[in-house]
Amino acid sequence: MHVNEAIVGRQSIREFDTSRDVSNEVIENILGVAGRSPSGSNIQPWKVWVVRDEAKEKISNACYERHMSGDLGEREYNYYPVNWREPYINRRRATGWGLYGVLGIKKEDKEKMQLQHGRNYTFFDAPVGMFFTIDRDMELGSWIDCGMFIQSLMLAARAEGLETCSQAAFCNYYDTVMQLLGAPDDQMLICGMSIGYAAGESVVNTFRTEREPVSTYTTFLTKPNQV
Ligand SMILES: Cc1cc2nc3c(=O)[nH]c(=O)nc-3n(C[C@H](O)[C@H](O)[C@H](O)COP(=O)(O)O)c2cc1C
Image 1 (cartoon, helix red, strand yellow):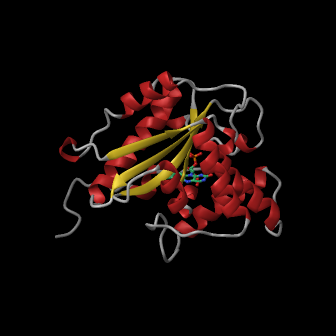
Image 2 (cartoon, rainbow, N blue to C red; image 1 turned 120 degrees about the horizontal axis):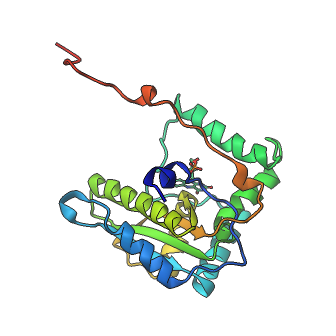
C-alpha cells in the first residue's frame, strides 16, 4: 500500500467484522512497525496495553455500565479545549452531526445518541482493544511522540488490511480502565483504540469527515513576515 493511500484512505471505523479475529502475531507486527516512530532523543515514551477476550470484556462491561447509568466520569487531562471557540466548535459540530446524520439519529433523540456513544465501550465490536499510556512525569513533547506512535500504528494496521478507531471516550472512565489493566499509578491513560477488520456492510462506516484546505493552516514565507 502506498503511504499516501494508507494516510488518505484511513478513516475511523465504528463497526467491525465480528467474524474475523486478529492474531497476536499481526498485532505484534504492527506494534513493531509503529515502534519505529520518531521521538525526541529516541526516548520512546509510549506504553501499549492490548486487550482481548475476558480482559476486553471486563473493561467493556464496566465502562458501558457507567456510561449507560448516566455517569459522565471525569478526565485526567483535557483532550479538548476547556473553552470551545470557533473555528473548532463548527468543525466539532459537523463531525458529531455528520456521524449521527448517517445513522438517522436526530438532535432530540438522546437515547439513541447515548446508545451510539456507548458503542465506544464495546469497542465497536472489534476483536482487539488497545490502550496507550504514558509515564505521568513526562512532558508535552512526549505526548507529541505518543501521537506519532499512534498514527504510525493506525497506518501499519492498514497495511495488514486492518482498520482502527482512536478513542478518547475511554478517558472518561480512566480510573476503571487503569484499574482493570492493572496499570501502575505512575501511568496516565492517553486514549484507547479499537482494531479489527471493518464490517463488510455498515451504515456508520460510510461516514467521511472533511478536511480544511492546506491554505487555511499553512503560511509560506520567502521573506520575513515582520520587519
Ligand atoms: C486521540 C483521538 C481520540 C478519538 N476519540 C474518539 C472517540 O472516543 N470516539 C469516536 O468515535 N471517535 C474518536 N476519534 C475519532 C475522531 O472523531 C476522528 O478521527 C475525526 O472525526 C476524523 O475522522 P476520521 O478519523 O474518520 O478521518 C478520536 C480520534 C483521535 C485522534
